[in-house]
Length: 119
Image 1 (tube, rainbow, N blue to C red):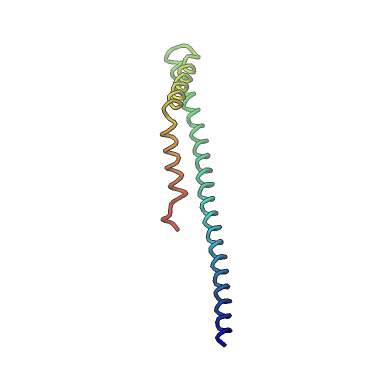
Image 2: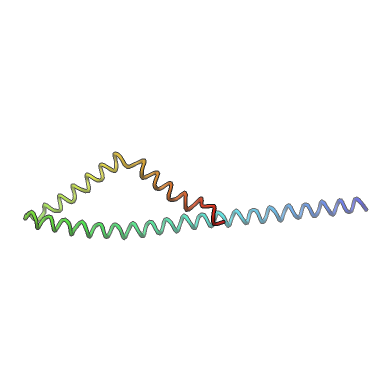
């Protein structure tokens, strides 16, 4: 009689452990899916915003180059000036911008991926 109760208790314990492990694995699957989707949506949003910003920047660059060319009177001078400006910006970012850009990106994405307030 006591052996049957002990056997039933062991069986119940085994069933409880199995259901706990199954629900725990399901939880982590859902959590990984949620984090993956957060990262994917952030990436898509970043790419869309980057594309639109690039198109706007190209249009503004052409407009500024045309205005400079008309002001100076030499048709191609505005394009060279705007191009030189972008080369200077590129060199400055290459020299001084690595750490600030990495910190900004890490901070931005770690907030979206590791935000534990919405669990």
